[in-house]
Amino acid sequence: MPYHMHEDFRTLYFYNPNETIVKATLDNLTKLPIGSVFSEERAARTKRLIQGIHGLAHAERRFDISWNAPWANIYDASYLLSQLQMEIEQHGSLEEHIIVIGCQMQLFGMMIVFCEQTDIQNHLLHRLEQAIASIDPGDLCNRWLEHTGSLDWLLWALCNAGVSVLQLTGCRSLATGPLPEWLQPAVEYILEHLQLTEPDDLRARLQQMPYTETWNGRACQSALVWSNTRIATPTPGSRESSPSYSHQTSSKFERLRRYSDWLET
Image 1 (cartoon, one colour):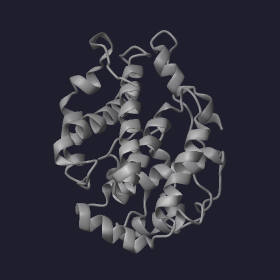
Image 2 (cartoon, helix red, strand yellow; image 1 turned 45 degrees about the vertical axis):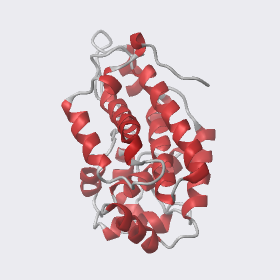
Image 3 (cartoon, rainbow, N blue to C red; image 1 turned 90 degrees about the vertical axis):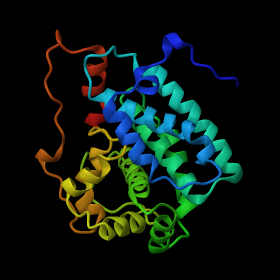
Image 4 (cartoon, rainbow, N blue to C red; image 1 turned 90 degrees about the horizontal axis):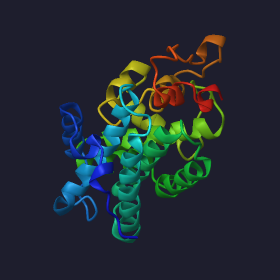
C-alpha cells in the first residue's frame, strides 16, 4: 500500500538521530554486502533502516521519553523491512537475505516486551534454516568475508536466531544446551573463528551493531554453551532480576520494558 509517515509522527531516531547512532550506522554500512538490494544507488534507504533499528535499541535505554514515542519508528522500520524482503525474494543475494532476516529478528525481538511474536519468530527461523542449512559453516564465513571483509553482520544475525530459539523454547537468560542442528554448527564455527568464547568478548562485538541488553544480551550469556566450551547448569542466580524503579519516577514505557512477562518465563 502507499506509504507516508506524517511529519507529526516522525521520530528523532529516523530523522534527526544523535551522533552515536549516526556513527554506528555509518560503521555498519561499510560492512554490508553490496548487491541488487543493498546497492549504492539505494544507500540512503539502507542507511535509514539501520539508523532506525539503532534508534529503537537506543530508545530502550532511555527513560526520559514518552512510552509510545518508538511506535512510529517501529512502523517505519517494519515497512522498510517488508519492502526489502519482497525485493530480496525476487533478486537478492544470500548475504542480503540473511541480513534482512537478522534485522527482522532484532526488530521483533525488541518489540517482544510489548507483545510476543512467536508465529513471526518461527517463520523467520524457518526462512533462515532454508538459507543456511545446506551450507558448510566454513564456506558461509569465507563467502561472507569475500563479499564484505567482516563477519559482524553474519555474527549478529546468527546470534539473533539463537536468542529467538531461546525465547521460543522458554529458556531463561542462560542457554543450557546446544541450538537446533541446523543452527548450532554455524554459531559454534563463527564464535570459534572470531575467538569469542567469553560473554564479554561477544558483547563487545555485538555492541557495534544494534544492541539491547534485554534481547542481544541473552546471546552473550549463552556464548560459553554455544561455543561448546561448557554446558551450563541452571542455578538460582542465573535468572535475571528486574531493577527496582520508583513508580513515581518511572515512565509507563519504562515499566512495560522492565516488568514484562517474558522476562519471567
